Length: 190
Ligand SMILES: [Zn+2]
Image 1 (cartoon, rainbow, N blue to C red):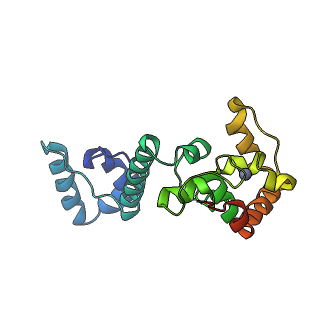
Image 2: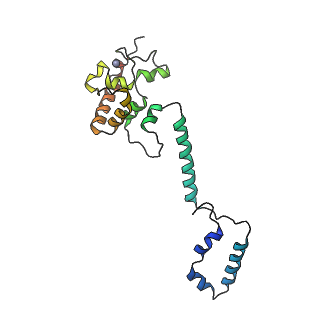
């Protein structure tokens, strides 16, 4: 039912033929006729209330629209936005380690520095300790490395990892290794 649908448009639906025939033999028919005439002659058509399910659907749609706008125009989480551009109430299906890797919110020097838990964002090997460093370059984690993507293909490289069961297992093991050996890998020498 469209929002603008009024009583005049609904009359044929409310009074199907068989019911009209039934009403012609009793007093109620006079009332029905009178109401129909009033509805037809009424200069300002009134609107029927919508069901609760309709209201919930409208609110849900409005909230998702606001959420999507905030997500598209936000200043943080841009890397995650590249992977998941559309907001949804459904979980993306990532495990804890995958979330840490994609968002960068994990035991990485690059993340710990933001909260003043370190004095710099370097790995113990000397390079910047962000998720990509540990997944492709850090000499402390050679056995879990992925092939380094070319810069233009970095996003597709990450999407491929998250959609491949073998790569996801490898990523999970990599992240667990970083968590277990955190004191060695992200040691703050200063
Ligand atoms: Zn390193």
